[in-house]
Length: 88
Image (cartoon, rainbow, N blue to C red; front, top):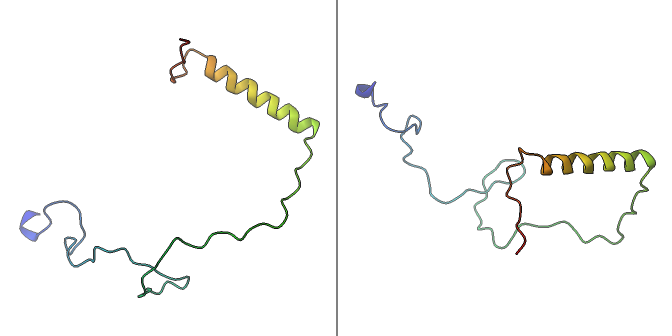
């Protein structure tokens, strides 16, 4: 294989040469943008009203309680890998 030019790390057929070092930007259609991008990307618009908080039903409360018990059992079990904090 070495005689055919396939030595070295896998960089494809051209050996990784000929690519520009700068990142390229594309629009929604996949066309390259030639202008320099200045500033951070657009963020979400400000919310006028916050959504209402949903009611927690009895079933939701049972699921949350079960999840908390399971998490506590994992964290206090003998196979939990995180170090326990020692008190001063």
